[in-house]
Length: 303
Ligand code: G1P
Image (cartoon, rainbow, N blue to C red; front, side):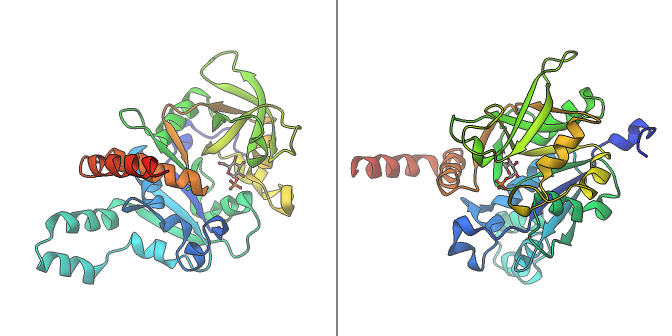
């Protein structure tokens, strides 16, 4: 069906950001606040992910949401009363930061009505994606690529080099942590050693059974062939439709490669990783660094 698509069709214009999860690791905070809205200092996690997508050349965001997530849509919408008040009070910097958000992006949202898995969440976006190649960005994984290309751009560039094969972000995780991730098997690509040709994948392998320590970490660029594959992917781990299972089929048909993103990855879906991300991003801010450094020294000295 997709075999003879012209090269233009493989331009990656749209990104899917799944944001329908319950955020149970951050309860009780996430009882009423979507975990995607938890701030890294003063910017919601999801805004950082959207900014990465846009800086990578993505033109449209497809947000996959669920119940109780309307504050995400509001965040990216115009906030007339707030903007008017900031304007009246001559708070021009704050006004600019708020206006920037609503102007930032063309966003559509689709609902995942039941928690049937990450593969299902992506599939729910199929119509909005119009069967095109897409990027998928998971909000739990933040990539700080200061001074380098943004993470999704690095994947899109690899997608060009990989000639239409899928691309995933890979990271070597510590022994024992494999069961938290989708894990791959494969070898460096014969024609381009910067790509890792994936031959097999397993979602959250049982301890001691992982094919390697190379884990999938939150960024994907998928060719159009992924859509019919996802459509026919059966429930897997935990009875959910797993994106990893669809990627395995893709790897064994059209092909799939991995790259290691040049940047620092924060696991903001984990409480300790989230705290680390907050500290790391705060340390990059001139107005916060001196005070935070002093505070951290005091806290450490106090044991
Ligand atoms: C998801 C994916 C998994 C991937 C992980 C980190 O799992 O299913 O393959 O390794 O994200 O990006 P989750 O952490 O949402 O359970």
